[in-house]
Image (cartoon, rainbow, N blue to C red; front, side, top):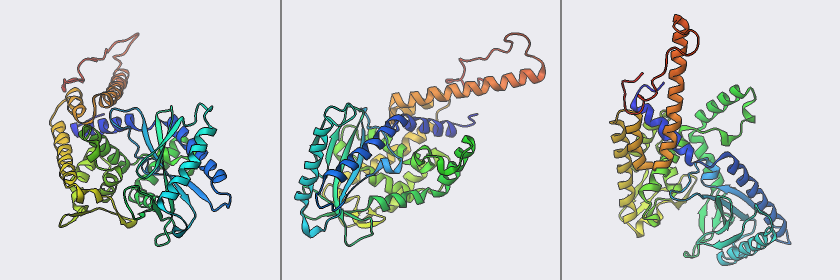
Length: 384
């Protein structure tokens, strides 16, 4: 039973991001495609067999995927790591080598309905395009000799220096921030399914921190819908949210707390802004802010607007009014879908409660005494 507006908001936020999350069937297809691409690169890349490794990174790895606003395609990322020394290649050569192998992969699967129909070069990656509602960005990389064992160096068409990163170590750091809740929820799901916790796939467990990141990204996508170039990168938002998360279980409370604390993890020294990768400090997730200060201004304006939107929603009464306010901030379709599911759940609980009451008091007899007033829930807070 929903006892407060705060609880309604939390439930609507969760339902909204669930509507924007990658569907389970499409998730399975994407996992399969990661395998296809990885096996092809491993088998066809280098005659010398120096080793090519493909693995997911970003939101797919972290469980924080959100469908971009206004699009039906999901952005998925993968790293293609070649086990060669930096001295034996250049950024341009590595990018071209990986592109050549991917071109052959696209050609080999041209008659496969599930394969990519084409690919294109971008600043740091090659993008494989599919008829299915996702595309896959493949980032060429080599090992970083001056970092953790999982550290990598990335190419960038506009920068002379190799770019440092470590998606595997970052994924471990992020999961450590939510480890306690993850374990508890996995055990709970296992008990319900009458199976061992390790048999519950990680993708089926959704923690409050993951939901917080998805809420932030969903609101960001609509706020920056007309300025995609200055939209804060997902990795920046995710990092700040993970730093700010304090273990709250109520989603609305956790989002508001994160928004309040996120700025305290941003450093500024003169005109230089810093949000270091927590596992590879040489990677600065706010590197674009120094050359374009308007990005920082808009970032803080976005956080402020999110606080305003959630606070104004908390002042509304009734599911319909809360839904209307959140729809302005998170999109009409996804919020209304969440409201529909929430309303059906609430009415179901009311009917069950009335049935238990009627049975225990002897009111229920024959077919259908005690009708349920269905029209009062949306907006009439006195109903029920």
